[in-house]
Amino acid sequence: MNETTNTDITAPGLLAGKVAFITGAGRGIGAAAARLFAREGALVMLSARTEAQLAAVTEEIRAAGGTADHVVCDLSDAAQVRRAVDRVVEVYGRLDVAFNNGATGVPPGPLDQVAEADLDHVYAVNLKGQWAAMAAEVAAIRATARTGAIVNTSSVGSLGANSELPVYGAMKRALNSLTESAAVTYGPEGIRVNAIAPGTTLTEMLRAWDANSPGVIDRLNARTPLRRAAEPEEIAEVAAWLLSDRASYVTGTVLRVDGGMRA
Image 1 (cartoon, rainbow, N blue to C red):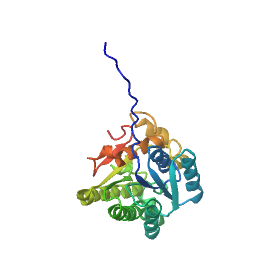
Image 2: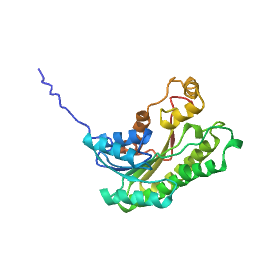
Image 3: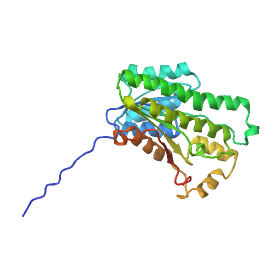
Image 4: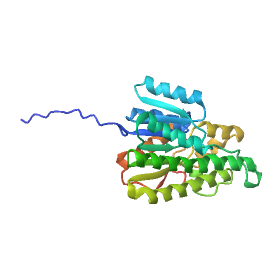
């Protein structure tokens, strides 16, 4: 009779030992990602505009045994973005992966009712800010870890007509293009660049839209085969996988995480 020995194999965390930079990390998807990345073994640097939110999430991660720090950064200011990325290297010595999740919204409405100031602000944060972050992150990865990965948060609203949020959708579609171009440019160096396109996700931004246009969440859920909105943690899980070595042959993609909405 053969004796079978059961061996308990504990897999390392998905991001074990990696240094991760996360924008928009004070709440919503970014905060969920910060918690998740730390649980998966990453040393995380949180970034957003609001110090109190960043400090709260940072302390929560530390209390759970993770490694976290934070830096205040307004994505509309390219100099602040560069300083935030520099701070990652100052604290942890290198940069391996980055999750560019920070974004701003705009009041819903048709194109002709979008205020020029709102258009300028969405451009400054959702496109120019992402460009600045990617440029700084590529430089930091090159100078330290040599290879790495970047994930940008796009939107399912960038994948087709978006009559209710036309400017938001346009900036996210431009971000898709930046993502693809960066993947082609930096792939030979071993730097992967992808984007995720979340569908209906229960963030503060979505709830504000629903408050302004009651019934939006129910209407979007009715168009979603899974018939529900995502929790921020569900979106963060996909970002974590794309940043991990388990996605080592994935680059240049805009991955829908939308419950089937665009199927």
